[in-house]
Image (cartoon, rainbow, N blue to C red; front, side):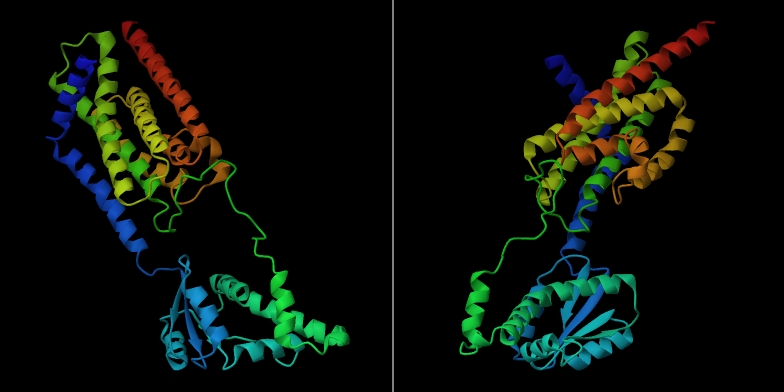
Length: 376
């Protein structure tokens, strides 16, 4: 064990003398900081201005308060009625929602058929995203509409209850009100230890996985350079593969530690034990994957040429930004897929344990095949 730790220390020490490796290490916390900082700001794909025709309307104030508390793809802002209209005209917002002077009365008139709408919407352009945003408004107004519809129905169908006031009828409505969610969203696996993430920070884990693999590929290039310089000339031929794997995994392990610290300081980690296990196995997956690539692309020039191509393929096919299910088999040829899913599904830890020997086994067979070919 002492010898292994000594090797790890010596190989790590060599890495910190390389400017490119230090740049990769700095890039990871910088990337996380930028994304987390952006997520803390007001951001959204759809911008909606909220305005009240009457500032002391309690129903409109309650709805606007709930909408402003939302933090997601829709960015809400509260403006005066005229400012909201001007914001639509100048393109500062996509749509304005104008609440009437007396929202409760307007809601009652809408239920009874006297009015055709409750909230006036002023839109700049009718798009799919704006139409979907209005579903938020419908959901926010549902509670008040349901109560108004209840009162209207009781008044029209049950004349024997005419002696009761609206407030007395509302008591019965509130007593049988269902507070549970109609739908429960979740994954088929237990993700209770994973904190909720903003849509801007959700790709961070995938981007880190890509950066870690790029670091492994950089470490493979370092090994090519060391081989050309004769650094490991004293190592027996049958052990050079193990030395190459150790060099790659050492570099990857250092980057994984930085990644874990970056996620921790940004409060993006879930279960700590599962995070550590996933990163440890991922470092081995990256090492095994690079060993396989090393046997396919055997020169520094060819290996360096595929680095940007592999990065683009990983960003496009692995579930970093989008999860393309039709590319399921291709996704699982690349290590980032396993790490991204392993943090949410512990079964992927087992898949990673299988992925490592498969890659190393194929790399070993290619190496033996090349040696046999050269002998002939």
